[in-house]
Image (cartoon, rainbow, N blue to C red):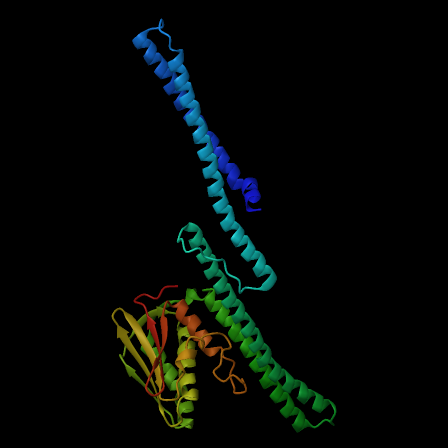
Length: 358
């Protein structure tokens, strides 16, 4: 079956064309050698001698060489084409299996580390990436459905209850207020998704300019100081007084605000949250540290995914988009984001390069 496919393949036809071209060149060389040899012999012995035996030997040798070259070239063409077609068939078979069964199939490697193994390895890595992305899309879809179901169910329940009861201005006002709050939460979630997508498509680089990171951090600390005091958390700012970076002020403010808000909400009540800005060579580093329970090491690589939440029941307030926005802002500014143990608690660090460019 494979031999039939080999003989019918376009690669084999190309190999035959190459062999034919090679054969023409070899035939020309052999003709040149043949007639050149005859001319040399005649110039030495003259035309009076009997050269038939010698000529026959040369012709026989030439025919044997031509036949041997033809057989070897044909055999080489079949073997090379068969190998190529075989690897292509493996890729085709895996592609068909993926279309029929799913993304868990992979192209087998032969361990030869040749170009075909490298192609198969690259395709397998691409399939791994696609499978990961599809899993993330499914997870996001499930989480969106769950997060939307709760407020929509509450709104429907209120409206149904109001529909079956007599009108009451105070009750109706409370119902309308609660329904508006739930709608604002839903709209806020979609606004966050849109904003993250906008950042990830690098559509916000027009507002980049030189900024003082310490000044932005100070404004965030001032904004959240009252919220921290409500749960007896000490919120403070330290580090260098002036830390210059290039970026979008609004996006950086939102990213730092999300990190500070998370530190206050998920840190220890009555604990402390420290925001620190400092210069690091020609770059800059801002860190937000708390003394709460922190994040388990095995979950740190997942917390920046959209809608990912440590609280799997998803009944606490929030939608899991805050850290996704932080990650998107960091990528836009060319910054590296790292989660470290604060012993106890968590420290989130954003490291900006010397020149943050879009």
